Image 1 (cartoon, rainbow over the protein chains, first blue to last red):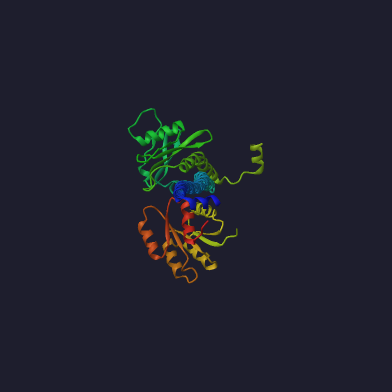
Image 2: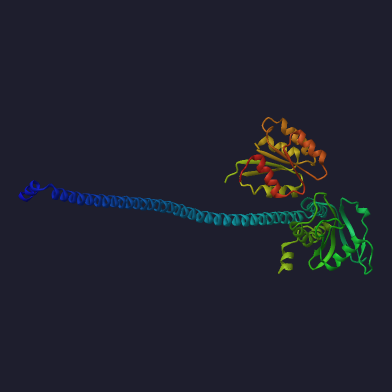
Length: 286
Length: 127
């Protein structure tokens, strides 16, 4: 203080110089200080911007992750749904397959039932009478009503003459049906050839596919192990285009039973045969 | 299941009758009564109540056409469904039967599923 006072009092020159120096230093310091402050501020602002950018980036990333997470969940849900649908589809396909099988089986059972019903009725009706005329009427009716026959003839063998003789007909005049000789000669008459062959071989002739040609069918009449005649089906009703399985089964039954039913009815009616005695039957059957 | 419906089958041929009865017996809800011809059919109708009638056309004594006509004037059975059974060529009979009031026809040779389907349709039986 004293020194300063002295100096101030002694000469202003050094004081001025010192002040200027101090001022210079102060200015330099302030300049440095502010520059540094500005630099720091800039750095802070930059850092702040950088952090802001980083936050934005992180927020974006976070949002993207959230979206992906949601999307993954949606995909998982969809996959689960697809699985469920696949299972439902398999179940439905399996069920449809079962349904188709049931329908097929049902149709088969229907067909079998119809076949059984027809065979039952045929068998019942063939043996329901011991009058030859009724047996023959039933035989014709079975063929017309169950098969759909329009015209037919029934031939019976004449062993002595070696020929088949027409004994009944429907839809065709009996008088117009010629006897069929059982010879080894060939003939141009297709029907006669088919009937003779059927009688001799015992193998039925039943047209396959559409029944356009006549005869449509020829069935040997069997009595035990021999043929005694034949049923000839000439034509079928217009809407009956072909034979079906039920018809073939019926032909088999008629071939096996109709001859026996006719002969039994004839023998029963002959000379009022009447019932045999129990004793006679016992002796025969024992 | 006890029968809910009563059916009258009018047919002169025992074979056809048996076949029809066999087919119809598969419908457990149906009780079947048989008649030999039109007159016998009328007799059965006079003594019972029927929900459906199946009748042949060609029958002795009284044919199916006359029976249809009579049924349609019978106060008890005038609304009962009637199915006529015809042969292939009898288009005129079929037309006449429908004109007289028959509801449907079946052509011979008859097939059980066809008969059953027609009866179920007319009686509105589901199963």
